[in-house]
Length: 176
Image 1 (cartoon, rainbow, N blue to C red):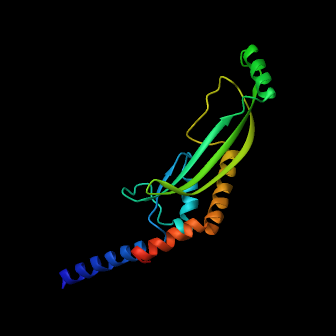
Image 2: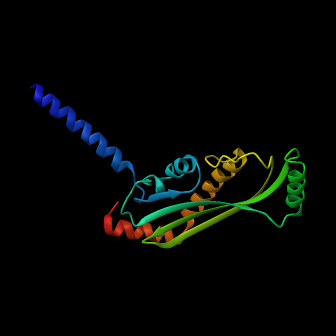
């Protein structure tokens, strides 16, 4: 009797794990990102099309790559002038830096890009030239903008003809 109860408990546990796995209806997508933190991935995984995305999914032919680039605007005369003033004052005066932030969302299948969305915004910050920058996290203003681009990406993917064809082909070969 005791062994029967243990076996029944184990069976219920296995069925609940299987049920949770089968709730994930999205494509098996490997997620790769250069954005610091997990906020973007968590927001993307809330969407039904991407709820099966994982960072550790070896062998998956479908990859979602999110790349964040920060480009200094070197042609801006204000940045040059304040940088020169900050350097001549030995860092007493702050420098005004202007930079463009670019975030790109790409979906690859077998190494070929099928969907590519790019968003760009210009930001200005005042900082001490000798203060180091913490690359493990974004400024709150930039992070907020990055999260809004996630919403734009998800709505664009909903309308994307290529992504719909990918889902249709996946369902044809592997079922829902």
